[in-house]
Length: 465
Image (cartoon, rainbow, N blue to C red; front, side):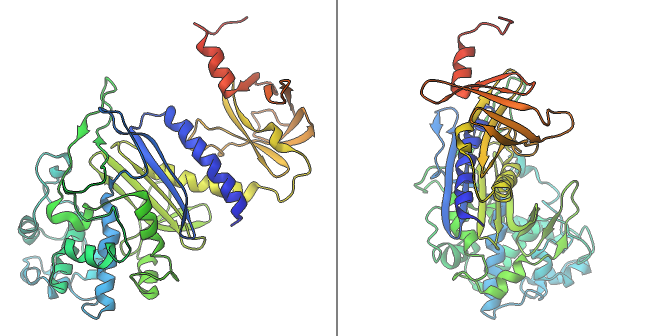
């Protein structure tokens, strides 16, 4: 990882996310990047509360939903290291009521199978309407009652079948083995040792730091409704946690093999090892023990996503480069996972395309330029220029490459067959040396962003002049 190039890519990402937010419909989000344990980007965009116009900040707390499973899996692995359980033990050894379940397959379900979603357990119970806030989340007693009468949906240890009820069961196992409530255990053994100041297993009115307000999707009048804060009761182990980007960067860094932390390296490696290949459409994803395993380009990352009523979150951690990307958002229709993956893609594009030497002053051509049909970012990468399209969540997906001709001219050297390969880009300059305009082959004349926005603000329509 070239750290100077990483620094430049992060500067671009910061500005690109601002630009995208202004043209998107999300209430707000926070994006963070950590490298080797140091946060190098932690930026907030939009609003934590639309009604009060409270600005989003990196200090705002989000419900991180299924990220909770990573804490639960960590607690299980700690108990194994202490010799208090083995992950290949039967769950019924610790929860006696499962040992008399009428479905005999339950008797052979192991802790590992629950950790990897390989137990075949019903996903959210027969009535999952608590996710839509049509009823409260189930208590521990309700969970036991429901699961005592619920057969396995699939034979255990035959396929991956995601289950929030399965992870809620793991919370009960942790209670039975540790002798304390699940929420107490994770606070004392994970959150406090890592000094996570704004992280916890369940919402409380007593938390001093500000929570974001979650929102529904827009209705036909483009209006969103705020969603009330929720107690997940007996399902904290599956979905109850809250946190901030700063705390989550520290928490996920602690899971990188070789870091001094609350968990041994062998446990970390086992958690990050593929247990199941997930069935997905259009992309590859695996599951370990409490961790989703995503593939972005050449990177194999571990982390998790989270979907809570009104809040969508995603974490990607590449342990080889010790690079972590986190996006937390407060709209139920937000694209946190897509944004996080494309932040990594932008970082990788800079790393792959930045030449080591610059024979010419390519930075003189940099900037954001707008015309009627398009918005372009010209980005210097060593001795070549590339065009990015900032109005996309994949800004470098169709990037062109340009080479130096002279101080006022570039040549398009790499593009697709429908564009203008081999044609020229001409620049005109103001008396102070700033760019006045550029003519991009046959795509017309572009102006710097501020100049273009000012010019159209003064017009009532666009017409031939």
